[in-house]
Image 1: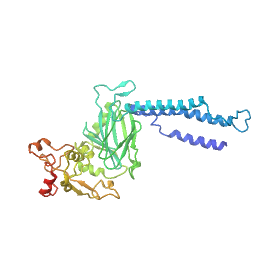
Image 2 (image 1 turned 30 degrees about the horizontal axis):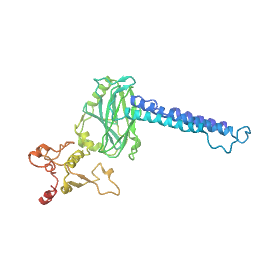
Image 3 (image 1 turned 180 degrees about the vertical axis):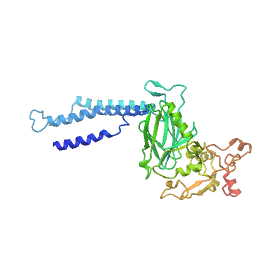
Image 4 (image 1 turned 135 degrees about the vertical axis):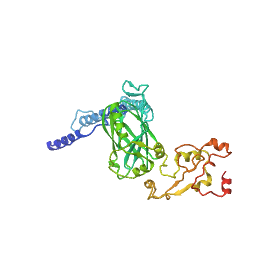
Length: 386
């Protein structure tokens, strides 16, 4: 190989020295265990790959045309010893990989609460996990701290060596929550909640981002994670509590609109029902929550009368315009229902209809939830449906 070509390749390899190898040198116990899994799996596969590569070179050299000393056996067809090696080694590797995969699939289950914060460091019995609710917006991240009643945009913090429980959802399209120094990526999906249990073991500032393409602003959908001591975390919470106003439903709808390069924001007060309404896709006034839909369906549904509860959406005024299908029907939404306790259908957040009161009135739970916006159908239709 010419000297110039070798020098060029060497200079390109030198550029890799600036790469961030955070996945192979993380700061959280879960990410460390995942790195170990990568190394173990790679090592097991190299047991076959390296000998095969070396033998390829050896055979090409030994049986080259100019080597008249090599054995020439054109009629050779079988070797028991070779067959044993060919089958035994891959089977052993597959068995080892299967065992490791089985063990780590359970031990690194993101839905499983942590039982350790590091090697030989079990979680203390008196330590409660820090709960953080995560919402993927277009194209920014919103973090709720229900324990402290505050929220932030594009930044969150956690104490070192304290377990963290993430509840993750999205507002419109699917995203992926990923902090390489902390743990593996977890999908964020609208109308669904995923979970992640993790811990950060070192103080510092760590980059997080979306690992799933979600539109024009995807590449700038990044945030910072702050690993802090307990004292510094308390100071950070105090700073957040002293800055910003209340994150109400109306303010959230403004924040939810697509935007890029959003600065870090703090909210010192949060509507306590906001995260549940985001999850149930009913932040906008007058929309039925998904939990309420499921409760009605579990009781048999509204029948034909239910069609009176569907209203056309206005894509120009709705943040959910991105969810419209090009070839699908025109967007619509289900109107909220009222109850005897909530005649205007404003306060529902994921609770079922009051079945006890319905029973005392000799009615079904569905009959007690009639939308204040639904034109009442003819009595014969209601009789037929019931």
